Amino acid sequence: MLYQAEPMPVDVASPRRAVPGRTAVCRAAGLTLAALARLLSGASVRWIACQPDTCQRFYFANHTSHLDALLIWSSLPQPVRELTRPVAAKDYWSRGVLRRWLAEEVFDALLIDRTDIKVHQSPVDLMLREIGGTRSLIVFPEGSRSVTGDLGEFKSGLYYLAKKRPDIELVPVHIDNLNRILPRGEFLPVPLLSCISFGPPMWLEHGEAKANFLARARKAVQALKE
Image 1: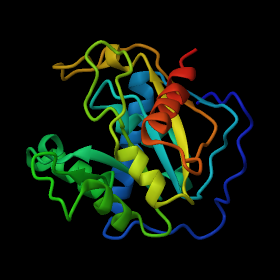
Image 2: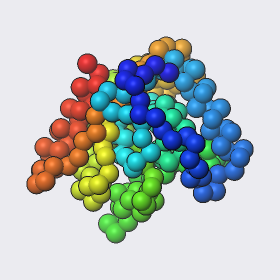
Image 3: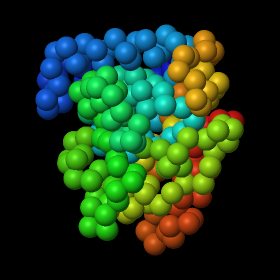
C-alpha cells in the first residue's frame, strides 16, 4: 500500500485486544480476504493530515459498492483493524450462510436492520452500545449506495453519533473508482486501480446546527477526491 504521509507507528508489540468470539480460523480468513481485496482493487492508501491510530474513531465514507466496507477495513493496519467494526445492512449481509459468516465472524460487522427501526432502539443507540470505550466504526452517511458515483446527501445518523460521543474522532474517507471495480448489480470485480484517502479528523463544534455539520462532513469527504 502507498502512504502519502508517514504514518504514526502503531504499537504492534503491545498485546492486541482480541475480538470476542473470533476464532483463529476467522482471523486467518480476515487476513486472507483483506489481502485479496487489496489485490483485486489495486488500492493505494493515502493518509492526509491523519495517521493510523488505535484510538476510537468513526470512519465515515462515500458508498458506491458492497466492497466499500471490506476495502476500508482491509486498508487499516492490523492493530487498528482488530478494533474497527464495519456497519453494514442486515438485509444484504444476512442472506445466506456464507455472507452471514463473513459479516459476523470474519469482519465482526455490526449489522443494522433498516426495515425494523424502533424509537427506543435506534441504529445510533445500537452502535454506541456496541463500541463501548474501545471500538471504532466504519459508517456510510449516505445511507445507500450511489449508482452514479456522485456523493449524496448525508443522513442525520453521523450527527447524532458525534453529538452523543463528542470524544470520538470523526475521520472522513473517500473511496475512488470502486464503483467501476464492482458496479451495482455485478458479482465479479473488474480489475481497476482504486484509491482510499483518509482525511484530517473533525468533531462536532459547540452549538453547530445539524444541517451545517452534515454539510461540513460531506465537504470533508468530497475534498479528498480533489
